[in-house]
Amino acid sequence: LAYNREIFEEQADTLRAAGLDPTRPPATWEELEAYARVLTTYDERGRVERWGCMISAPYMEDELFFYVAMLGGSVLSPDGRTATLDSPEAIEAVKFVERMYEAQGGRRAYDNWAQLQETYGGSPFAEGRIAMSIEGDSVIGNMMRFNPQMQLAMAPVPAPEGRSPITTSARH
Image 1: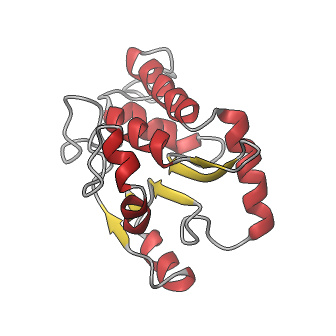
Image 2: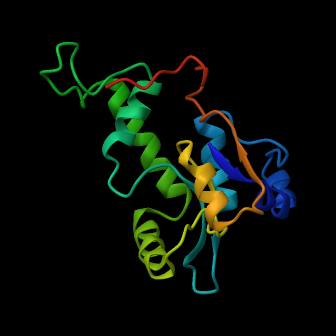
């Protein structure tokens, strides 16, 4: 989880009012949802200005596999021949993704926000239009390129309640 410490500091009072700690990132899916809800900001017309947490690429592909694996499941049977997207883990992963979108205004709000980002170019995360993002290590190079002054912080990806992000493995 990559996050912008400046945004956490700017929103410290709002985070505290919601019972969240602005000095640390979320550790669980439930906390991630709560932080995302608070850190998502809207303009005077109700459109998303800053996305609280980017959890996936626009059409999910491998990211869904990642969340299923975090729950201990897989999207394929052990022999790799049968999709298991109706498993309890897959269904819970999809529900998590749905909750994350709803916490930030819904999928339509995301689509409208993403369309605006295309007109800006650059890196929405580096430019402060995303507060947190589940990223690979390439985020470090992007920050060095687009915003070397950003107060970038990294933490383990929040895990489902009762699971450790350290022991979670992404397999598919």
